[in-house]
Length: 269
Image (cartoon, rainbow, N blue to C red; front, side, top):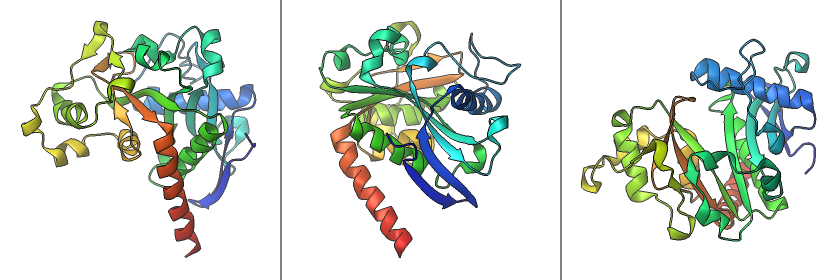
């Protein structure tokens, strides 16, 4: 993968996307994750370092870390990383012992598929960069990573903030009734902290209300042809309800290239 996947002028800053290449890069990613997941959303965990303001876990060394860099921000203060995606290619799973999301979801159907799998996680963007080019750039970096490594299926936990299932009944039901993965891709939430998603009958789903309650990242995967797990997982450490998103990348790649082409044409015009 080239050091710089994409560069664009946006929000009066030069943004670039690349993989983390050293310990400093990883620390900057963990600092951003702390600001978003711990400070903003109230997460915690056994390896979170509150004194150093780092959100980390035992899986970090097995993942590639896709970074969005803002060249106007001070790298010495770990402020230059303004977006992160954590990616585990299939070659690292044996060394890691398992996939990160395997503690929440039974991935047996994916493991048995014989296809090249990529686990995604810890996706976040600095508050100042939301709603602009940041997520678009990260998605393009992800698409290049997937194509270069011939990944066939992407998957990973995606979160609703909070653990009150009743408050999330409409969006969870919409995902359950309309976006559940087909048999060959349908992972299931493990029973220990499983949350059923079909809390509202099909005929009672208010699609407009439900879509308004679905986080932007999950919506993006759905637009690109993604599906969700059978059941959600109650993650008390992160104060979230997690669904497992699964996507056949052959379908994603075609849609993503079309989207990217339209974006570039719009910029030229």
